Image (cartoon, rainbow, N blue to C red; front, side):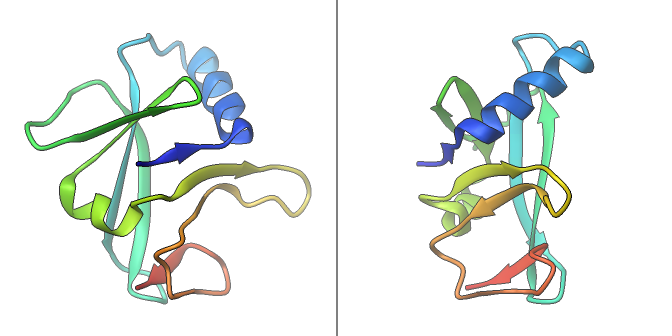
Length: 108
């Protein structure tokens, strides 16, 4: 399962309104190689399901990921932090053994 915190839900709905995205758009999340710690998150809006997508809905937000990425993301929570020191969207990932200083990448 992938979870969506209330803070992320509010920001996603705000972006959806601002960008004029319809209800057919969902959040696509993936994990790719890169960053200081070896793996990095990618997130975007998408409206084209893929054959091997893993689909989750939490807190009124549909989140989709590929199977390989889900192995790294299982039981993670998408969160949003604003303010002066806010880092935007980020994952609270219990599978990450370590993260880099900037929080953009992780290792398992």
